[in-house]
Amino acid sequence: YKIPDMTLSQLITMWLCGDQARGVPPYRLLKTVHLKSIVPRAKLVLYNMRYMMSAVESAAVEVGAWEYDPKSWTKPKAMAMYNKIQHRFKFRSKNKTRFHELSWRSIKNQLYKNKGKLVVDDNDIFTTLA
Picture 1 (cartoon, one colour):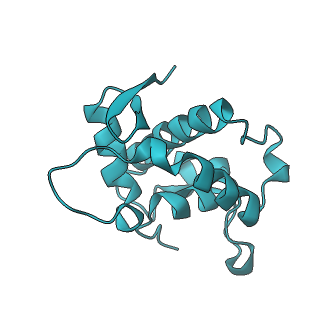
Picture 2 (cartoon, rainbow, N blue to C red; picture 1 turned 180 degrees about the vertical axis):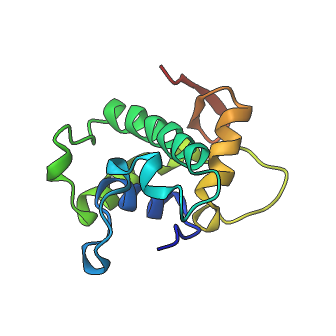
């Protein structure tokens, strides 16, 4: 198995739900030991995913879209949550890019640059990650 390149919505779905059709568990259950042989720098990859999902959870809790029971997540619920919070991750950019095509890693890098602060609206940035 290889962890594919993913958009933010795909990461959220894989983190919370996995891919039952392919026998892939939710990524939130993965440990470094599970990935060492198939992913270079597995510890860093999981750390970055956790960091990104921490921001997702913070944004979702703010709008009341977070499910606290991990077993209750389904793909439709994950996508509904994503639709409610996606604007919080649309950082200003010099490049004209389509947000839905951006890799979750690019969005994570923007989050790092903004010191963990999420976008409030199209012109402003605030909310710091805990």
